[in-house]
Length: 639
Figure 1 (tube, rainbow, N blue to C red):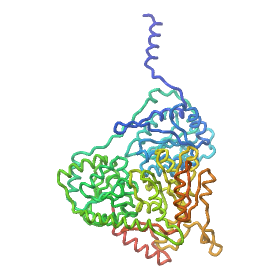
Figure 2: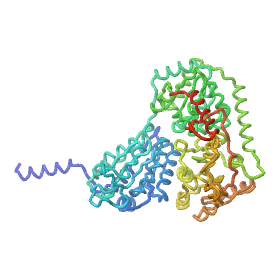
Figure 3: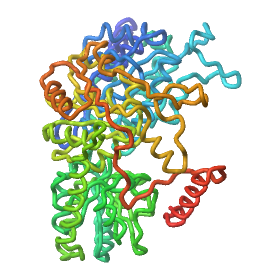
């Protein structure tokens, strides 16, 4: 063979083995990659990334914006109206979809990016996956300082996007287009992990978004990420059975993990088989129908009388899929039996060890099935009496009935309004709430029949989540009615995605309970010795130069109508019932402005919530509140 022939052969062989590439900008490559990510849970395959929410500005309009405009795949673009709001919408969507589908969110640099930080924390605290793609300053640094750049003289590598680090489960900055490949794979690793999931942030410098690279075709292949149930070892199950067998007075705390594991039937069977009463966290509520014989209602600081009495007596707490927050444990004072121990079923070791629990690190559905089988084989019995449990449940149901029937001559009470709404909507309808006095009242009083019809963001209790969250739920469940229950304070903080719901023709109903201010915090403040300060929406008074004048009249229905939604104002029971009927018939988003009396919410039942009350004050009421706090702290568990 001559030299020329050998050279041609070598060239052909090299060409045949060289990976095929596609020349794309980094932003274009990112979208093409996201469009080919799938998730498999128990044999059912879903397209993982549904689309991209975005607000364009300098920093993403000519990079991600161009890529989205020319994108020919299946990703849908949705226009946000506030960067925080669009991330809340994406998070609510992911939560409603049991974390099996997500949206990504893209923003400009500086303030556009920083607007997403609060929502990133909300997603991370709640263990909900969202992919955030904030624009960043130039990686080349040549035009610095650019518009909206935060300059740190001691470390020039820092930009506004670094603020995402403490609230992200994974953070990366793509400073060269080829870095996308490892960053994108790591992003998927975290987003699809039930234990480590939360906000994932890929910070995208605006020049790098537009830079091209020859990406290997293999990078864009279809990838399926498998969610596998974690099965406990035989030894772990045996240890759990041995602990339960020693106990005669157990209770169950049902958390959000029951929903994510699709373990509602297994929870019901476990509770029924061994007659163990169940208290629900905010995230776990609706795991059992409210009428279920073992459902004692909410537990903890916003708990029912039935659940909290049983919690005080319990010698064993079986926590299923919950991180045992201060509200669920009444700041670690809910469990007074000196013999009480904790068994926590959770896929996360971090959560499973809280309250000094014996950890059963496992999927909730599998763990409950195995425990039921093993305890049956051991003929386990406890000392709970059906008559007593039924009596506690009936007594609490009667208490709820009283709240729902609360009539006032001078206006509508908040609990009566919630009762009317609860009785009006259908079992399959979904409610969403997040902050103010609404979570406490709904946790105690709301009667859910079907799983995942109660959507409460209470990990971060982020004001402004409600309207945006309702849109996310409607995107996830387009055939169900979705109601956002929101206070006037939360609505004023953020309602921008009401416009997006109109733009996308996704009808939501906003039930706004207007009580003239941040009344939940006002009540909390007054309960700790304050005379009330800075929490009501009043005009400034010339007499004392404080916000102590008349209440501010705000027409929230007119505000909704100005954006294209329907709006109703309600001051009486008849008007409320008529407005609910009309809203149900509407085909576009509707807001009902319900004027309610302040201070007409529920109170605590056998529970406490720890606050830092001033140790020194000129007011005797505050001094007394501090002394009470100190006494309760002594009763709390230390770890």
